[in-house]
Image 1 (cartoon, rainbow, N blue to C red):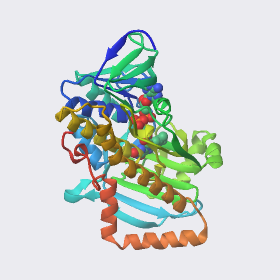
Image 2 (image 1 turned 180 degrees about the vertical axis):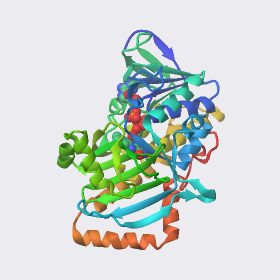
Image 3 (image 1 turned 90 degrees about the horizontal axis):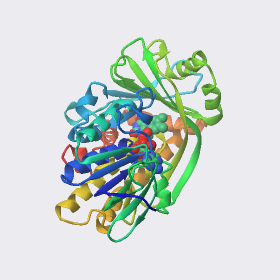
Image 4 (image 1 turned 120 degrees about the vertical axis):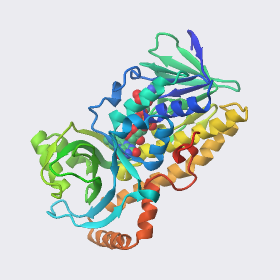
Length: 419
Ligand SMILES: Cc1cc2nc3c(=O)[nH]c(=O)nc-3n(C[C@H](O)[C@H](O)[C@H](O)COP(=O)(O)OP(=O)(O)OC[C@H]3O[C@@H](n4cnc5c(N)ncnc54)[C@H](O)[C@@H]3O)c2cc1C
């Protein structure tokens, strides 16, 4: 490692949703600390890089995450683009079935009528977080630079950069890797992953609706995987759809008219005819869990720490829960005058987040195995189970509280309090 060196208190590698949210939370909690966010894509213009508004991906943000974004000042600019989900319908049928009967339906609000989830397009979320980070004077956004490796010792951690003109090395008390599912820094730390691939591909697109959706989300369980219809502002819906890999490749190869026919076949007819209202995207599904969340002066958050099946739309919410927990333990350390990157601080973070991530990954994996299946006895049993759930309002309330991110040991930011 050579060249000039810049010094910070915390360096966040990866300026995706998790990295930007963490930088904002730390800037608020550690008033005079200097924080750097490094990303291989440009971070200077809202809407630039992978967050461009044309990305078809949309997230189901939990009520807890909405509270956190409010504390971080990102929610006001997002609110007009966020669609509250007022109710959820669940069906379980074959692809050929013309009618998809609703087996479970529930009100998607928590105490006091607050929606448990909001659907937000990825580009809007990124734009809001980028603006919030830019407004904070103690955050330095370094776009177009890759963090390629690091070395830690008792005093500090040194991070090697590639592609950045001003310096080749940055130093900090703590390095956080928010660099996504392939996480080059996780590899550099020598942290392995438990990973398996699903024989399924995720497909996402946006459709236009003839009839208003009324804030209802629908999950059609189909033999090849779940097909989620997430309501968006402006009589549109985001589709997040899991399909058996070979069928998915054939569907993705079709032209727009052919692709729309496939979407419509799964969508159902409750909202009338649909149109394509955006591009399509796809990704190979896998599940991965880092074998550790920390190393010397180093922590993992977001997809760098775990990747889960999209069946429950919880991947990003889990990552933001990491962010809220890490910001809280670091803020507590700063209040006590402790070293921000010390083992004690990082071990508290790992204890807090390890079990939740592993349990969530296992739960979503089991749900996918249970529902992406057309074996008649299993289908009968799960439809019987869904029928029971439909008759148990207490259980439905528990599911909604879970989706709202308000169960378990909830970090302060997700309760709507500063870290
Ligand atoms: C199609 C799709 C739909 C989804 N839908 C949902 C949903 O409805 N709800 C939900 O909760 N989750 C959803 N997810 C999951 C969600 O997208 C991820 O969990 C989330 O984006 C992870 O955020 P992150 O910030 O951890 O990582 P990323 O968004 O992957 O960000 C990582 C960042 O690190 C940068 N980077 C990588 N390497 C380096 C390096 N060496 N140096 C510097 N920077 C680097 C990248 O450029 C990137 O900006 C979905 C995922 C997909 C693919």
